Image (cartoon, rainbow, N blue to C red; front, side, top):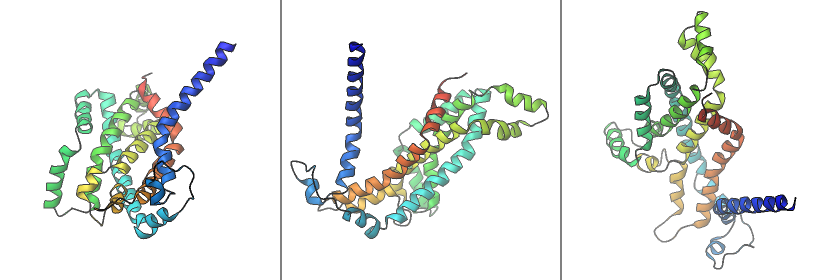
Length: 271
């Protein structure tokens, strides 16, 4: 009994230690967003300080952060929506017809470094006068979201028995009708998982937005640069902006956490 009690204590201590290491950067960022510049750069670090909301006032009042928030939302939502429209039928085809070569080809687009696509995108969009437009950012972010949708959903569709759609087709339904009326309703957790992960990747993307967007379509990760100048870095503003950027992603993950876990586990085992 004592041995079991001791093992439980050790287990919880190890879990607490790992959680502290993982959460420490976020906790540091959160507390720093309520500090003044002097408190942030002070050494040794100040753990007891007078909180201030000045950094958040600066972010949402002086920097027009709501505009950047809207830009990120538009780009993320549209790119994920288009990726779902294209990716769900592609994933179904890969799962049902064992199109492994197509699956590998789509995966390569995700594995290749994004910077290898950046120069072609820049040349094409500049020639078409689409720089600093939503179209340029949405198309580039589809490159991020589409492979995620295809790979998650192709694995998930393979867990759904073929007999369910075949029985509907015996009763006269077309394969397309069986896909929309039977397969998609059964794939809710997988679709939520793919949507959540794709949106978060799009939301946090920095590289494409840095090159393809300017003041009109600037997204949240790029807006952090407003607090960095040649002479100094406004660490309070940077931390407050980082909290504002991370908050929607964290809330989205917490809301759909059980669906994401279920979607990933269901897609991991074919049964």
